[in-house]
Length: 85
Image (tube, rainbow, N blue to C red; front, side):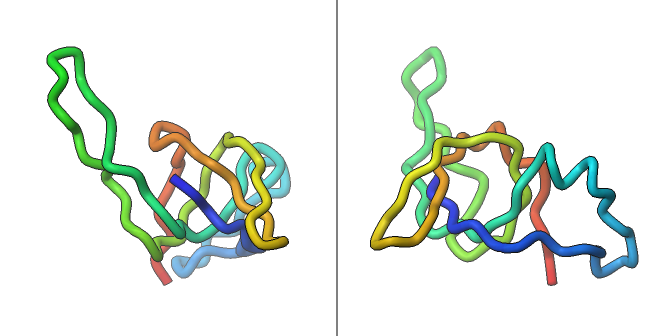
């Protein structure tokens, strides 16, 4: 998935404050593109569980710059949470 980074929220919509230690281990952004999915051992395509436009928190990815804007390539397994506003 291709994610455009964004500033993390300080508090969730439920009033949960996100501690600084957690912010250092994860980032936040909006999904701008997804692939077709991945193939299992039998070769069957398993579609991606996320959609373009979702705001997510993720733990790891590869930095990439597109049109001067910072993005990150993230594997589906590295998505920690979907953020609903």
